[in-house]
Image (tube, rainbow, N blue to C red):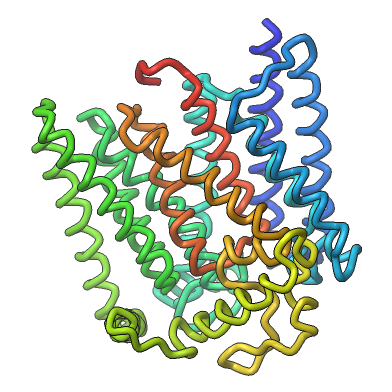
Length: 426
């Protein structure tokens, strides 16, 4: 009885969290609302989730291995305050980022609580909410790239790539990587009825979302998840499982559909083609051992400097969101702007919280991946798994943002809950 009450509390506040994220993203465009207020309000959800988590542990003081890892990461995040360059920034986050300790604790607490959510109806609600948030951003993005024009509402100006309600095309791409993985998993594993057609349409829309973002990191991420799926299919073929050829056909259809959407949109705007060709050229040079600091729009330069800086304070790091201060505001990107993030979530964590924290976070994600990659998952869990994998891959090239990361940690929590269930399909 107690577990059901906790689960109901968790899903209630997850739904409220989604409403908050969606409404806040829109308010930042059309109302007097900013990231500082958003970070503060998000931290309040962290307090609520902490209370629920503590209640859930009363008379049931047991922890799973992954749960313990999260708790250790929480402790390491707190310890990073010891040598933080600026305590206020470490606690509340840098201005216009607001991803300090309180927000990171909120992420972890979201994951810890979402482990309790296993009811099929609740899982579907979360899938619907993720899809709604993504579709709203794609819809707004279509107006930003002027694919459609309207006088009904003011569209915040954008460049040739869509930004959605997130203010940046890379952030938009991060969100789209989650959506594409989710819908692809649902499409591949879903039942053969009218919902399959709806999912296929959503897959086309998700493909458009990736393309609208222009995020090469998102393209790399979906390339990796296609490779993961192909490996899964090959292994199942070796095991002589039934209906595997049908899965392969669906995978090919999905891949060709993405190519079709890509080709059609290229007739309207060819900027992504140019970026893809540049990425291919850079990848070829890297494979030949020719690495230029300008590669990845200057990411290689940022990563090299980040790694050198990590060596100076490898244990506790410089404090969460203190990246810019670690370089004394003297690290500039290819456009001459001051760099305030590592453009790699894992290097960012290692620099700000220490190598142990950064490595442990990677190990944590790898455990989740390998615990699930060969499990027979239901369509919902498979979609969540691909969304998790896609986000985790693009995180090697992107930065964490407070309007997308909570969704990632919701998914992490749900997947951990699946790991510790019996092997039957849920």
